[in-house]
Image 1 (cartoon, rainbow, N blue to C red):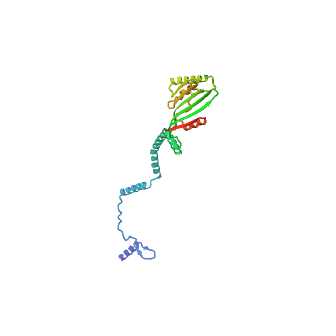
Image 2: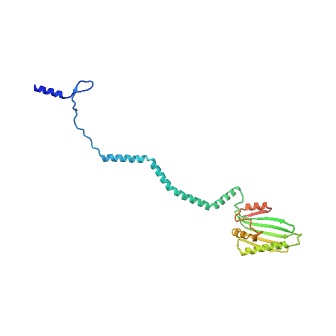
Image 3: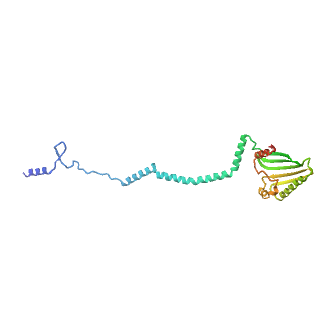
Length: 256
């Protein structure tokens, strides 16, 4: 009797679980009560993996800031070098500009078939007469590659057949001797020779343009009246020839 009551109490105390679609009861106690084993995780390995992943991302996908920093650094290193090279180039260009200009000029003249590259001498002559005087200018130029280096000008003054007064020859001779004295006292790259006879006076003026002191001539211009140098060192002989021929001279070249 007591056992029956105990069993009934036991059955009443155990809860019943009704599953959907069935009226069977099951115990609420889980069938498998074995404890689960959780594998221990090494925290050092996890941290290392995280660092490696970050490094990999940094190496494979660089940020815009890093790219800009690297590019800026390269520009700063190359910039001073570029300026130095540019300054060297500009200095060399200015220093060698005369040679470059001469080379280009020679090349163009040679290509065009002109005689700009030739050296030698050129003689130009001009004759004229007044009522009492016949005079002749003979100028001989020496040049190298068409550039003026020296000149020799001979002026011949001859009395005309109708002239009875030779005072004009005396005046020309005095002017020549005065110039000759000045040039002998000052070495300026110019000399003068003078001669006179009963009917002819001759003045010869020699100029070395490489030694010519134009400052002295300009400061003493009255002493060089009538003898002032009209040309300069390295002036183009083509230009000189054109000017003289336009003024009535006849010119002839003797080139090497």
